[in-house]
Image (tube, rainbow, N blue to C red):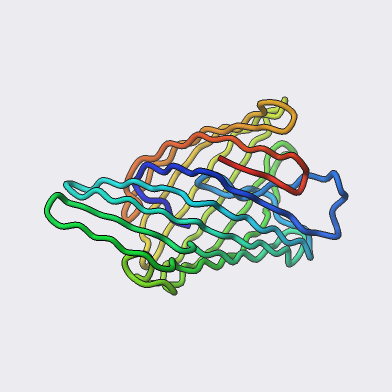
Length: 229
């Protein structure tokens, strides 16, 4: 749930929605992909499974270069029509690091993430807002997981520009083991009937210090299924 100053190369992700309260053709906004999260919540009783396939993250810190390969999982459950529970894990990871003198190779489970997302009232119909409070539990082992318990509080805002275009703004504050701010604006647009694209940028401070740039596409062959890359 926390970004790092790095170059991330996501190969593919898949999101599935299971809900008896949605009509067969009713679309849902998934939280994948991107740095932030969608402003919509699942209806009460709705369940969404968002599975990432292995992502390669390359980081540089002085003479140290590291490569981390992980596949995260997120399960979303609608508690009410405006409140949802999120349970996620960083998954199993493989890490290699080298500073030119010493090399490290490790693998193991990552940490567990819990969150509550609340849809907020918006001043206008074309604006939507949501708040997400989360905690990262150090259930993994160093260097893949572990560390200290961390808390985050984020807000997402989205402006509907019409013609299947939107502007987004994500602001996140980290506490305890993940101190710092993250600011990430984004722009989403339709490519064709089932394809959409997005571009985003991020600036972090404190433990999240760094600059990030992302671009990607989503393919939604059916309202309840989405693939992203």
